[in-house]
Each structure stands twice: as C-alpha cells, then as structure tokens.
Length: 141
Image 1 (spheres, rainbow, N blue to C red):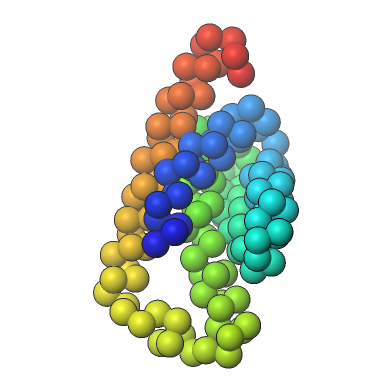
Image 2 (cartoon, one colour):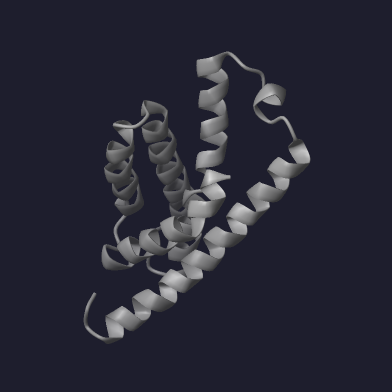
C-alpha cells in the first residue's frame, strides 16, 4: 500500500532525472541516492529501492537500448516502484522466514493494489514527461 501511495511521486521525479541525464545508469543512481537515505530507517528499504531501480532500468535498456525515446523514459520511470514489490516480498520472506502465502495474506487485494500501483506509476511518468518537456521549453532543464 505504501508503494501505491508513493508511486506517482517516484515516477514523476524519476522521469525528470532521466530527462536531465539521458545516460544508462541514471535511474540506478537515483535509486542508490534515495536508498542511502532510506538505509538509515531500514536496510531492507535500501536494497528494495536499489534493486527496483536497477531492474526497471535493465528492462528499459534491454527493450529500447537507452533513453533516446520518450517511451523508454516512461517505461523506466513507470517500472521503478512496481519492481520494488517482488524484491520487498523476497526480502520479507528471507528475513522473517515466512512463506509467500504468509506474506501475501489476501491475494485479490494484493493484485488490485499492484495494478493500481502500476497505473499510478504510468500516470506519474506521463505527467512527469509533460512537465519535463515544459521545463525544457522554458530552458530550466
């Protein structure tokens, strides 16, 4: 549920960072910097954010071979927070010694929340792309 609430904000700021620096590794660095702040709260959050950033960037770069197109930027920013969901579940299972069914108590609710997270991430990425283009036109980025 935390991921769903923050998905729109992460995708907006992620795509703005990708639009500013269009090089491979940008999203991973964003994840590293943000994860470092979260490391002080919980080490699991650091690894979850970093792995989500790395996996989403890997997928976007495998499909589009870089950040030249708007679609590649949107895909990378959109996948950032949803890709933290599997890693969070895996870390929770490993650390607490729980099974998948114990971590995901209500599969239907989990699926609905995951779909909502993906939808909000997509909306945020598209909104961030529009905002970034306006900032580029104004010469601020």
